[in-house]
Length: 264
Image (tube, rainbow, N blue to C red):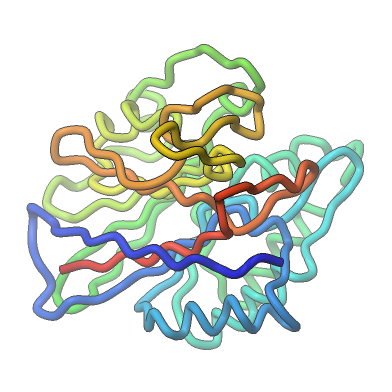
């Protein structure tokens, strides 16, 4: 497994600032990978960031074809919950587990019950609030309709869909939205997410100088929101290049990425 690249993004809230800077860590697209025995290399990088919480933006597991793998993800989440609050929103692999019961049986329910028993805070069209260094945060997890994950989907997501699923965000609280699929940033921003955290596109798998990511896992060429920090007015989105791959294990000029968000 390749060495992990740790990327830092600096965020300043227009609403309020913490009395002292702090960091959050974003995990996306682990796909049950392990960086060293018991994921120790990844845990070392996380500990070095000294986060106040860990946010998982989906696809921590593999659920593809008839294959379901979650042992490394469960072990990692168990280690993390011993030290940090861990918030978790689904990606398409977790949602596929639930939708394809004829293939995966009770795997989805069993997996969710297991990680909840470890202390993971599941955000399934729900939210939780926390206060860090006197800065109030509302952390939401969004589960879109499955149609938005279908290859070649051209439908426009609307902010109304998010409002129906999540309610309206408090404009006086900094809102973080865990939304696995980054292509719908416009809807997330219009809904009111101050900071959207996504993954899904694996950084475009192959990255070229000046051009960025070449192809998404859904075979879209040069995806618009493949990796990095994007801005729409006062709203921002950070897209992780992800930690691993699943069926096609292709990553060129695109190392596994751990994202650290520094609130200033």
